[in-house]
Image (cartoon, rainbow, N blue to C red; front, side):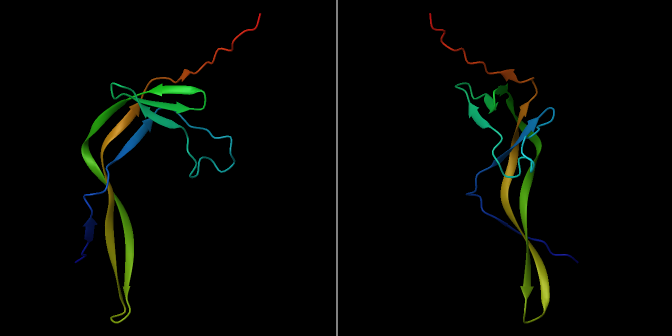
Length: 115
């Protein structure tokens, strides 16, 4: 029998999944590996806006049918009994996702023309 131990701290904040259509390409050789890809904002109506470079994406927040748990796996070694056990800690719950379905709109800044 396998015993799975779960620890959960309800004070943790919920996470959201960000779903994009298409491919994100990086000019960096290592990709985005830990780098920020853009700025996420919410307008006065609560609609999400994602700015990536010179592109603006508008999306919507959707509640997931089945929530996800983000787990952290820990191996615990008991030196006295020379046994190992596995413990999982719930890092966050994912109940919502932000969907960006529409094509990005270019952000164009008009320069003041001098006369």
